[in-house]
Amino acid sequence: MTVSIENGQLIVTVNEQGAEMTSIKHKETGLEYLWTADPQYWGRHAPILFPIVGALKNSTYRYEGKEYTLPQHGFARDRQFEVVAKEADRVSLCLKADEATKAVYPFDFELYVHYELGGEGLQVRYEVKNPAAKELLFSVGGHPGFNVPLTDDLTFEDYYLAFSPMKSRITLPLKGAFIDAAQKTLSATNTNLRLSHEMFANDALVFESKGLTKITIASDRSPHSVSVAFNNMPYFGIWSPYPKEAPFLCIEPWAGIADTLEATGELSEKLGIQSLAPGETFMTKYAITVK
Image (tube, rainbow, N blue to C red):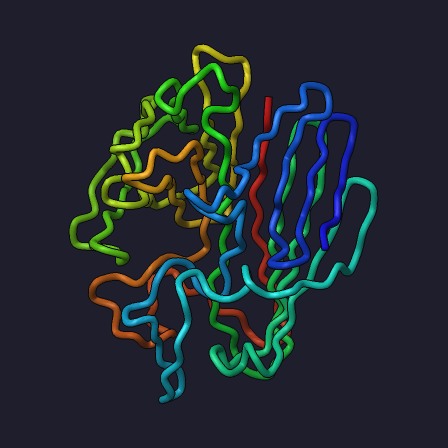
């Protein structure tokens, strides 16, 4: 089932399966900003990444001497969430640990996903609670895809990425599905980056993020754009499938990251892993603004 929220400008639809946004539509223009999940390119819209972000080496990790298997980006995106609060312009959904999750991830947890509209934008907030008597190890992140081009008269290559603040950032190259941390470099995100499909020939572009970061997808030939802004997300990815010439782009804020080539497999040693003490709550968020 799906639920919808709206205000004077936008209508946002969320699927209870995976608590995944399936539509961000402007009420006046009818413009759809969120990727349509065409399966010939990528059959998702905006999956939630939990309890890991990215891939594990051999799809496995170790915790307290036992080995477990998790697919890329974890299991939350394929689980049924419960709607726990709903108003006209906001909705909250929750996923809690059960026998199925504990078979692959031996932790008690409560994952809340909050969507709230305001003006021309949408705030997406993740809240992770630890109800157990031991620490909770996890990662969480977003993976929203946006239609590029936003209108039929333009092409993917008509768009560019604008970064704010305009400064260089550390980029972490991928080797296969894993981070090659030894080859990290400084990337020229101090200028606009023209989009092309070939820029994703080595999969996603992965960056470190410090402080407030805003990434805008825009074109000089259109008044329409979409921005993603976040603060408490130490990494982000930018992705479109290659060699498919897919008409969408993902901007992905992450509190976590894929395994490095040197990863030991111990969950507590994983790069970007979050640790939450008993009874504590972790919160992070990102905002989507459209024109």
